[in-house]
Length: 394
Image: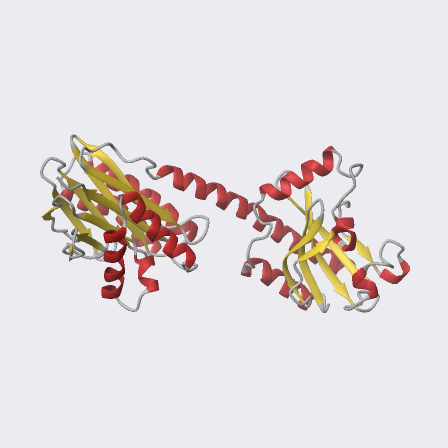
């Protein structure tokens, strides 16, 4: 660990900036791996890495030629010297530099003889890591090579900033989704959306329209930022239209609002929208290509809700038909996104598993938590969303 004398205000600020990026101890990512692979080729070196320097260790985000190196005690870190520099730090021959002569990686395999590192800066300018090159023979970098190394480091700095901004966007996206359900006597309501990455294209929403409960669950084709932007537009369109129109008209109006955006991006949105009359349990719904809304009864039986037409954006000018069912006492409406289907060989198997979860759970919240835990335990590769509406027995 760094001594107390080294951990001055500047070093503390640097470490805080590193941790704020949210990159430490994250899995490998192709956008970082591609840069070190390119560096290995462009500079003709056997080893290259993206290293982040904490107060007591060096952690490797991406590497090539270093046999899966991840954590290194700070005393053996070469990059700890780089983060103290304002520009490229080069050691032409490590055996001739007293700072590196006794370094583990110099004395032992891979017997590093040449080191070059460019500091990587956080958005606030703090130097948090290094894009570094290693060779087993002494050498130098030409002025042209130094210019290329600076450019590559600039790419990585943008990626580090992008990662932090994605995390912020993901937090904002989660805040836009409802956190607490409205109070409905005799009903339980819960929902959760878990994106594959920091931000995703699934969303759910609920709100009251007069004395009725309005529900929306939708899934934008795709992942990441583009899908999330369309999801935000879709949520606003569905919520706005449902304030003034019945279910059929609301879906048509939302589709019209989104039509140009979906056409320009060559994507579509599957959506389930339903309005519940709490007094009777009557549920008027439109299923636009979603197909994953099921009502389960207290005995483990189920019925799938009917389709109303294709997804939004697939066939311009579509009219979606509204259907009606009744949520009887003891029954549970479950709506999920297609990310859950990845865990099963077919839809029937997925429904049977869902029936077991619903039957065993005590509350709607427990249903949602069990579905979410199931997906997270299996490293889901698609966004997963689940909403459960349970009508309590009389």
